[in-house]
Amino acid sequence: MTDAAFVPDSVRSTGQALLSLQGISKRFGGVQALTEVSLTIPEGAIYGLIGPNGAGKTTLFNVITGFYQADAGRRSFAGHDLPLRLKASAIVERGIARTFQNIRLFHFMTALENVMVGRHRCTRTGLLAALLNTRAAREEEAAIARRARELLDYVGLPASAAGRLANELSYGDQRRLEIARALATEPRLLALDEPAAGMNPTETAQLRVLLERIRDDGITVLLIEHDVKLIMGLCDRVAVLDFGRLITEGRPEAVRNDPRVVAAYLGGAA
Ligand SMILES: Nc1ncnc2c1ncn2[C@@H]1O[C@H](COP(=O)(O)OP(=O)(O)OP(=O)(O)O)[C@@H](O)[C@H]1O
Image (cartoon, rainbow, N blue to C red; front, side):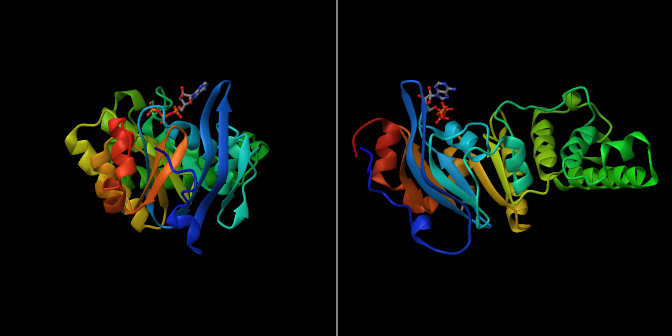
């Protein structure tokens, strides 16, 4: 059974909030996908979002990243209101970058070019300067390429991968490349939609090390993941959705033993 009066610890606590959601609801026709979800992601955390199939994880993720507009609720990011109507591109500009469950790279561009595309969102030189190939535009392009190479190295791709087409890379490397492209927008919150999906155990272990590094370098991480073992071992906090409601939220060891979570996953009553 869900507990409608549940208020997560992280909502009660003050300070350190990077992203706060209050009373977020979303309906698709006759389906109430989210009902008054409130949670706060503390800055500097790896924050996991789990729940059984159809619980509303992807919907909430899409609301956070501007791909869906919530019907009701409020949200704030880094102390500023983040209006529900903001589009995905505006959300990126505010400092939230995402990856996708099904890899969405530009497959016939090189790995380096894929990351440079992400970086171009942050450039200052205008289109006219780029077309005229001014010195400022050339210098900026060189700086973008330099930063893109750094990011490829940061996510663990070998230097030889930079010039290869994205679709020639291994699955695990494509996932890393997606993360590099998201990081190229210099986010404060990196939102990952099932980053370990389809990975073998070695790739998953490497991903874990990378995500901890990203967190330790000051970028907050949000992830949806079906690999509960990975979530429990990696996350600082975990939120659990069931039938569109937040049923519990807290440290992994507390969430793991919460009877509401056990019941949600087993499909029984708490
Ligand atoms: N675009 C949509 N149109 C209609 N219904 C939708 C849409 N997206 C999600 N839903 C419904 O909303 C509910 C929540 O779905 P959602 O995909 O958010 O769950 P989930 O927890 O991510 O599930 P899964 O783990 O299976 O990916 C489900 O009943 C789903 O069928």
